[in-house]
Image (cartoon, rainbow, N blue to C red; front, side, top):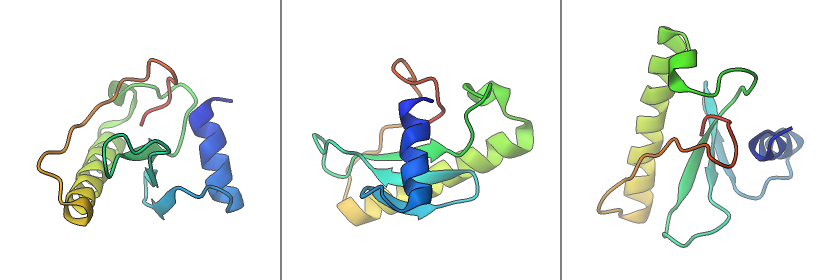
Length: 97
């Protein structure tokens, strides 16, 4: 299992202290490290072979990106962000987040 899958299991078990909200395609969590105040992640619910946006079918991709936008707006409002940065790096974990 990957680190993100482990964190999702913690959400399902009710033991992830950083869990905020479940959406249709993913889970919202506050980042463990708050180097940037309000650092938040949106974890895609499924891992498997779907490690890139282009692996998702168009409907799922559109929903994931729509929900990511909803999360960004909520983070901006909650933390008073001047700018929201979006990243899909996956260098450490190949799980969409």
